[in-house]
Image 1 (spheres, rainbow, N blue to C red):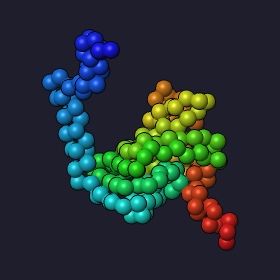
Image 2 (cartoon, rainbow, N blue to C red):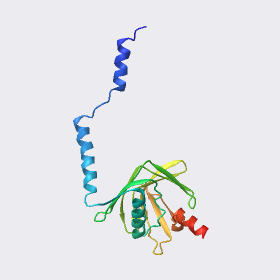
Image 3 (tube, one colour):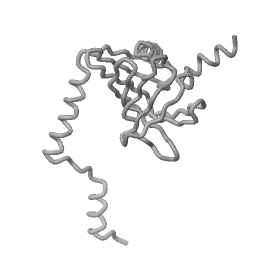
Image 4 (cartoon, rainbow, N blue to C red):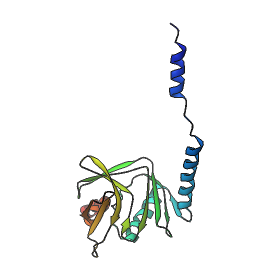
Length: 176
């Protein structure tokens, strides 16, 4: 039985890629240019082991516990110290459960943030079955014992810094 021409046309329309109009192309290019400008002057590191070492060093320099950003399979990371812009690229998005806070966090394949001493932006966490964008993560307590997480709607919550101790470090101490 022959296929009606209208069915062929509908199928072609469904599978043919749609191209961006000139306004959308300009917006997309602008995003690419802005992303490249944000990274200008960065110290860029490649490779899982080196990226892990670099990320831990950065967190420690900023006053955060090294387990607060549980990223796996890092391929690239960079830090523009003049602006505080950082990025970390993983092979795939990653979810992690912090037992100490009973919180699940998810990070995309590329995590970006602006950082300064005791302050960071750009993490999402799951609370009560919803992903809540975290706009700020900061340590306001002079003793550094609590980390405060603030959402885009102004709701915040603090957790003890000890809840974010690097799990590998904790396991190593338990073995000793």
